[in-house]
Image 1: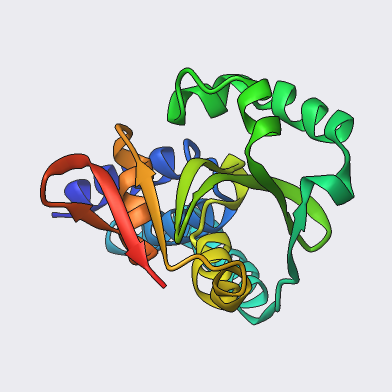
Image 2: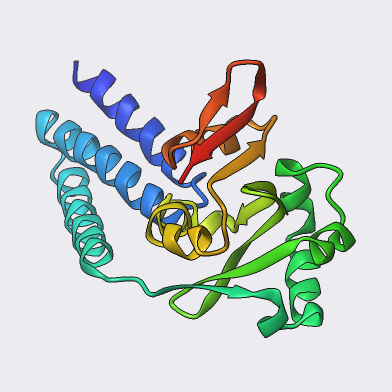
Length: 204
């Protein structure tokens, strides 16, 4: 049993180091360190127990700080930010953007109604959409890996819903073939269209 707990703790700690999100890294590392400290306690390896108990405390402290921190979010039209700045952001993250929205060139986003997304004054993503009457078709809804904890989605699709309603938008429509992006859409209230499994709709 002790060996199984030790192996499980090692694997979980290894998985935590693969996380791009700092919050996920801390949570998973916390779980692995708890198991590994338990393993050290069971086999009476006090240095193993001690160092991992300290790591548990460090992870718990940083998670507490992250949870109590109130983030500042902002959504700014591209006209206010400038196309050149957005182009630099897009080109820097282009490979990751294309993995979620293949065949979406920079020019297509300039032609759409695009907003830059900020978190604590850091540029963390963008929302590009095309307005078709009361419908907003999402061209791309991108967030950099370090900030994919769904808070941006809550800000855009829940907190700012009146902002979009005032533009006459009554529903968002997003097309997605990416599993991670589909999870993101579902978490933010999008539901699959019965006629097309790759199409997701959210009513405002």
